[in-house]
Amino acid sequence: MEYSVLALDQSMTSTGWAHKRQGDETPTWGLKTLPPWGDEEGRYLWDWFEWLGRMCTDLKVTHLFIEDTRFSHKHEETLTQMIA
Image (cartoon, rainbow, N blue to C red; front, side, top):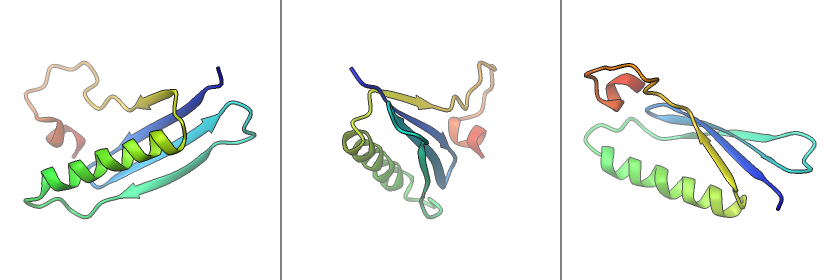
């Protein structure tokens, strides 16, 4: 089975991505941006998840790597606070 790897580096309003399929000479990459969330965090998070689903489907992703923003530290912060 051929592999198709998608790696993400996310922040509050942008997600860097890189993709490489077995046999590709070089990876492709890009940046997904969202406007400031304000009071519409749920809406933009949903938009992000839909985008990710389309990327995984279109690129036939077999392996997805997402940056671990929590590190293993014992913080009392929310994920949103730690990303900021």
